[in-house]
Amino acid sequence: MADTETNWAGNVAFGARRLHVPRSVPELQELVASADALRALGTRHSFSTIADTTGDLVSVAGLPRTMDVDAAAGTVTVGAGLRYSELTETLQDAGLALHNLGSLPHISVAGACATATHGSGVGNRCLAGAVRALEMVTADGSLVSLRRGDEDFAGSVVALGALGVVTRLTLDLVPAFDVQQWVYRGLPTERLREGFDEVMSAAYSVSLFTAWDGGPVDQVWLKQRVGTEGPQEAPAHWMGAALASGPTHPIPGMSPRHCTRQLGAPGPWHARLPHFRAEFTPSSGAELQTEYFVARRDAVAAFDALYRLRERIAPVLQIAEIRTVAADDLWLSPAHGRDAVAFHFTWAPDTAAVTPLLAALEEELAPFGARPHWGKLFTTSPRTLRGLYPHYDDFQDLAGRLDPTGKFRNAFLRRHLGL
Image (cartoon, rainbow, N blue to C red; front, side):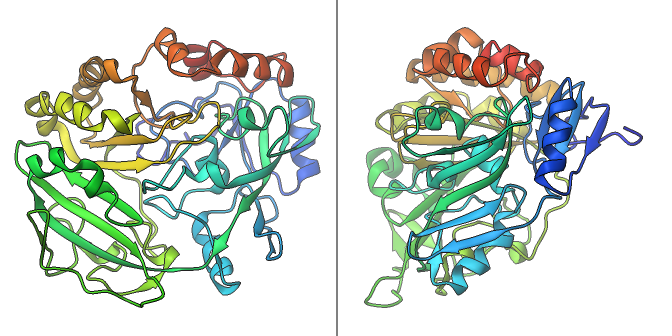
């Protein structure tokens, strides 16, 4: 490539020879069939080398930006390159909604689903949990369709780009709903430990933000569905935390003007469930990210284990977030088979300082079978990963059938999945 392509944060410089942006599915099929090595590139919000390749990169952002709503079936079929921010207004106008959204609405639907990206909520699965059907171009250029219930479906949704280039997805919808959002500050750590499930179940979607500095949890973001009784008032104090008197950014000291509206003002689901507004497109971020998922039943013990590392964590941390994700049956989802709690870390952009800390985090979380987010930084060994995912070997077999020559494989997949 004439100009080096990088990911969103700039910590990964792709080693690809070329970047292709096909304008039609037949053009993509020809490209895939003729390539010797190829990886799909989404909106570049992964911090790992999951999309890197020494072959060619292909973006589906140039494919037709379809949005076909089937109100009777309760689904929408979208072009894979579509971003969630491009989809949500159309759904709202149709009186429909997705069950959840990530903290950033600017990511692509296909990329988010392929990596099991998620929002929060004890009853909310990751974004890939809404996928009812998908269409992808496989290694020989064939266009393959899979639906929920098909033999290979559960292994093909969160597939890390290892099986083909996804072109369309059909997503389950729910009736549109309104949400109120409040932020509480200074949740005592002991109150969280004593009532973790109570805190995380207090709203439709709950996020905790902490600096791991030994003090209370800095912020609790409560995103509550508006019921038939209409908007509600929030108490000034809750669980020992105080209601914020003004808009808040997750990172202390940063302007909240790009955050979704708070202070209990009701608004449509897509304008409250993300942390950041769709009309604000984030620039490349000077940060690194890591995230580990443990079973929700182990949340407090895992919290205590991480708390022991707080003096090492705090100096290189921008902010940490704790969220919940409901169980699913997708083979490579970090929430596969168990309701999960996700411990997320946004680090300063210092790879040399962060990398050894990851090993320490993983050692502390090892007793809880912590699964890393595929699109973020981790050092978990392939041997450990095999033990964490019951369908690890099944996925290897599926990849071998759909991509027998390894066209879609890269160093990341070879290292972490033995492909």
